[in-house]
Figure (cartoon, rainbow, N blue to C red):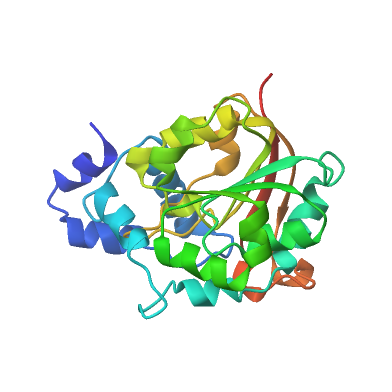
Length: 258
């Protein structure tokens, strides 16, 4: 019996289950909290959808409809994000990845990460974004990026399977995969297939709520045959210039299987 069904069978309803599973902190868990995080991760990694989380359709609808007039997750705010975290990502992968590499970002939003890579000398850039308002903001804020990069509009579920094998040298995500619904776990397989050499992720791994899904990304990608080359966790003492919004996030660089 699945864990969720087992708990419900003894009279614990979805609302209480949701409160027990809910976790907003990116701090390293300890004690009972660690057990909760581990349980959440394993449930979502197996593709299970507990009754307290949004449906995959609702998740995609939410991200499709975000505008700068919306409450939370505004494209205009994302366009102005500090980009020191991009420099930290480049530092993580620079022994293996040069500016001549082709780079694909899954979930590029308004494009500040790609724009920073462009300014650092990367010229073969592409991205996938579901939200039309974000792409319009990109055209206004980063016109040079729009002229240079290949930006594909659509959900990751739609676009990634259509990409050719080894589409880009590096496929990366930043604060995107934790929003991938458990029903869409095939996205991770498509990321590995589309990467010629490396996958890099910078994601929180402990948060869970109705539309955020905790996962251990080392386990996720190693199960797909990837080898983790290095990792870094952004905590307050070692953040340096990286924005405080990334406290608790984990950066991981993987070599994809040959």
